Image 1 (cartoon, rainbow, N blue to C red):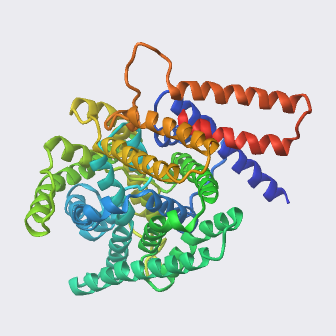
Image 2 (tube, one colour):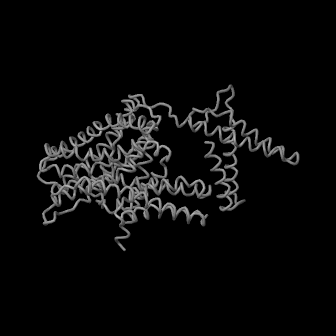
Image 3 (tube, one colour):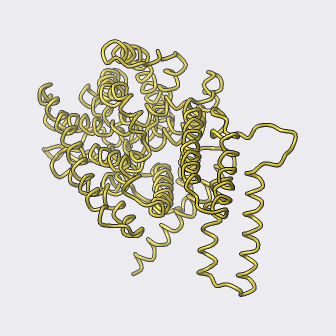
Length: 533
């Protein structure tokens, strides 16, 4: 009972810390993953702060599936499909380039490392973080073209990195090198098997959704889906990561016809909260791992450890940059000349930012912790603690230093410009309103009496007013045109809704209505205000 109480206090404290630090970070326009990692790191120096381990099984089987699922849900299938070759270049070839590059460098400057241990170290740190990169990228206003590539890369490279890690562990344990044919076959099954499992589970969910229209039940089902996909994929030795991603992409494409508006609103609210809490706890826990990371290292001074950590982080950043420039040109040539896409030639500043955004996160740290403790003959696994330490340093440097420098870098390189997706949103608003106006005119022609005509005229007036105020490339696609008067339809509606809210609250305060009626009407006002605000 005492252990349960302690665990409850610990989790409550973590959640309070996540909420408080994230709130302060947003107040100062700082990306919350960076703030939470720094907070966790500072807390690790406080003597009486509880030491909380981060077991790989918790990361891979508890934390990772829902985060991958929501990331896949939020990914645009159109952009993912369009950028598939470039994403594959980053998620597959760059992972192995990083592993081999670290293998080459490590044997020359890391004491006690041969090329096999170097390859293993490179495999551990090769996957980028699905959360950190995109959350920071969106926060700093990075161009959508770069964000799409980062999202796709971080969704898929976990599977490639874990395959490279398996090869690295095998080489160190057995002293053998896997053949190229075996590597290709295993990767093909990881990918194809993962996709098949994810799609199969997705179709099962789609079939089940036909019989269910209940918010709590559908939300509970959505929470089970990523774990089912991951566990089934892992059970058949395919990629659980790819299974979750494939399932998430499929269901997100069908969500418009599967879920009612009410269920969608409820689901998004639950998943937004869950995503924030999981991400927040993960980033705090990363910072808190410093005592565990340093505990197993002996015989090296703190200054030398700091130098090794910084040097390795620089080498990893340089390897990514070295890959980016030729690979981006090759991807452009393949996509335009072979695939036949209309694809703009990547500019040097865009390639640089894409290379600079290779942030590592909890998957890399969990991969390092998952290394065996001993070799087959019982000897300690060589350099295990040092590999964990170097991985921790890379996560800190890429998240904190590169993440903090991204806003400045984007401004300096002139990338903080209007995004085409904004114009696309304005065009979509215009077409949707046009369809609504045409529908109202059609129904108005069959109106039977004067009262019905008045309703149609009133609604048509509102829609025609909204369509005239759309700026196809304004901020959020709906900029109000300038005029001599400060009064606008949206502003007047907002003031009116807020006055309704005041009256509603007064009715509850005076006992005229109960809480159930208050909540029902308040929800309607919330939806109306959120659409206009």
